[in-house]
Length: 245
Ligand code: NAD
Image (tube, rainbow, N blue to C red; front, side):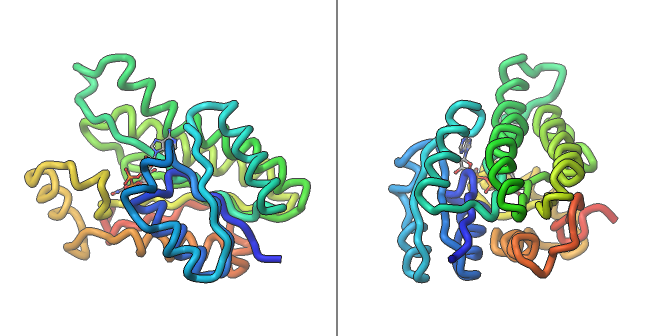
């Protein structure tokens, strides 16, 4: 039976690139995003289906516990199994801490961090019972090193790193791996909204002197979702063109 991957926030950007790559690897794809409108402006579902795998969209707000529970149940019923979970959905609401309203902090924590608990709890229970599975979380270099203007975002991404290691320890004996990738500056709608000044400042810190492409994240996720990484768990792989050295 073909394996099934569920990828949150996969209508565009890094999530869409991961869906395409895992489909090329032969997996059926459970897409997720907030609503169907997100999928109307692109052909990502058709491109995945053209690769000969099955694909379906499951709309849910992953910051909501009950919506995640219902979505995971629906994916399991549709595909029979969930072998790979990619916790990709994420948002930025940047601003300096001194002026950040409480709601702006709470919203980013809910979407980026609470969602990982929601999804991993329900999918993890399925994976534990089937004694196999790979969970991959999207962290960020902001979670590793901090970033001015991103107190909410860097907190959520640092938390994801702690959660990754905890899940690896809780689920390891059931043959379920959990790893994180920490992208640097990747060309997507999320980063398109940065100013030219902010983009130039990022570029100056990157050893490879270029931004990354979503496909370069998808390649590492593909490895972590494959049996080639069967003894890798609790790790954070930075994909940043050398931003930290
Ligand atoms: P993006 O904004 O292009 O895509 C994110 C997707 O998540 C969107 O389709 C959005 O609708 C969806 N989403 C947002 N809130 C949601 C919710 N509550 N429920 C379900 N879906 C929701 O962003 P991207 O650049 O592709 O980022 C993907 C992931 O990679 C994020 O977790 C982000 O933090 C992380 N990341 C991105 C970069 C970068 O440079 N682009 C760097 C580091 C980490």
